[in-house]
Amino acid sequence: MMLNEDKSTNYGGSARPRDPGIAAVLSLLVPGFGQFYAGRWGWGIVWLVVTPGFWIGTGGLLGWVCHVLSAVQASRQVERRH
Image (cartoon, rainbow, N blue to C red; front, side, top):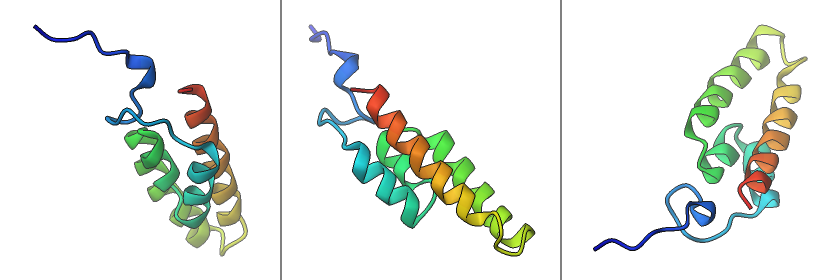
């Protein structure tokens, strides 16, 4: 017989809570890594593809915007899971 697992404490396959600050820093370093940390693999892949596109496509003018938006989103995704 399987125990009924509380899904509200399941963070990307692990039972330990995640820190929104760590998620933000990870996404500032490499956009998408904070989303991976939060267990949001689809969003992580999106940021890994979109951010370099903005860095290259705008000559560096808008790449930093993607870095910041990725960090904010990663932090909020972790906060929502608490």
